[in-house]
Image 1: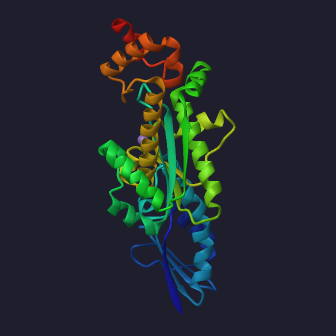
Image 2: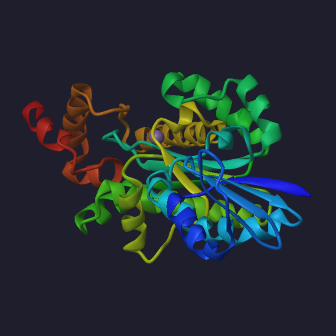
Image 3: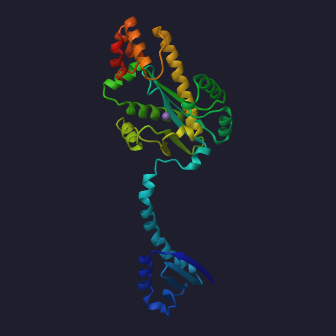
Length: 310
Ligand code: MN
């Protein structure tokens, strides 16, 4: 003798009542029906609770529980769809890839994108080093942390979209969003190749546009999202892997700005402030307008704003 209790949809219970019609017994108080067959005595209640008691209650219950499973998962489907791209909160403490970019809001210099593969066991070490959102760190700290990250031999992939290429793509009609999506995509696929079949719980991209749009951007270049890719805004404050990517990307951006400054012979500022407008004017006076294609994101409003300083 054994027993099993299941909560079943009322629709199923109605079906059961018809199914067991010839085996109905006297119904106890509060119950919808009671029936008996070779396997079990089945008692169904208004609450949806169904009691299976007898020689083989499991076998009898299975018929009805299995039937309701697809219904239950159908009901859950819409909510699952909504949160598909949101990382599970457990991801942050597990082995994962994080991806972030730098330079997108800066008039001078490239866009850099970096992703890093951080293993569970390295998370504490990176936190101790002070790895966090690069937006809250000084340039010197970023450079120092980038060196520390290299010493730890953390697998990463870094891509630099230099200004000539950026301006060319922009003229071809690429939005900055599409450039970023493709850079993240290539960086991630490079890194996935690098790590081979090493354990991986997921990939987290610091969200800069709707995941749907990201998918559309890479889809327009016949690329698709690798499995277990997640998106969230401000990801670098939650994920050490994204923070690591953001530091590598930012350090590379700083390095590129230094190199460009040396090449053009003028100190190029970060950002897109009025100081940048004045620098543009000096640069045009010194080298002519053509120089901007090799060191600036020419379509930014700063290019026109600089005219008043000429
Ligand atoms: Mn970011």
